[in-house]
Length: 295
Image 1 (cartoon, rainbow, N blue to C red):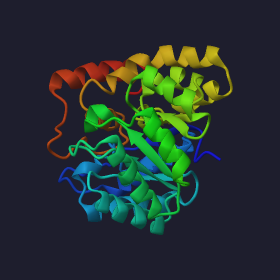
Image 2: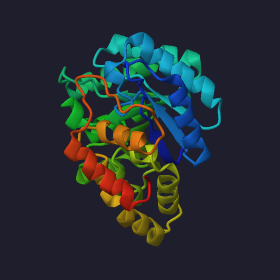
Image 3: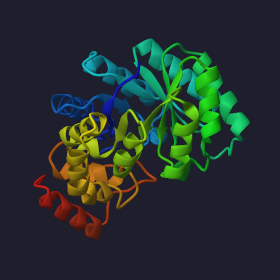
């Protein structure tokens, strides 16, 4: 059984103006997501700026989210690291705190081989019992999970059950579906590729766009899962400019600015080395938000 189907939100970690985690704002965002039909919460991933959270903050944010969501939707904890031991520690803590699954990004900077990836992910998964979603985002990490590696992991490690595919390589993703024979669930890690990836058999999307429009992304994913291509195509075309707009700068800079302009968070603060958008970028984003009646 899939961890979730449909649209899961790769939720931001809101910070106060002083850079501390804004837990009341996080709670408001979680309620906004759940009230508007999101199918899962993915906490402390790329969009959640996990790389600039301390290990203590990382675990605290995950634990707080699990407690606050209180089983209303699945909570998937981003616990990956480029250090296998750290990823084991974060994953075990997330399991203890009640996470429904973990999301494990490929180990960035180290340039692991495919065999190294197998051993890295197997070591982490063997340390816990909850399901594991692999996260392939080579543009961020400089490391690509080959389809054969993902399939080997799914067939040889019981709790590795899914992969978030953000390689943007539809040919590679198509090859993954062809050789996996249903042995691993695939989620789109790119909002603008949900239609082609779900047409190949994907289970849903782990979405940045959902931060601002959870109901719309849920509707789009649901339409694809039901085979309603007309509705899915219409929604995809209607909102493609906004999906692209949320990536006009490095994620999560634009989506945080959007949430700030929409009044959903009180600060657009990103931890360095990320910074807020330029005035020119903010103006372009504002125009898109106005076009879609979000501000």
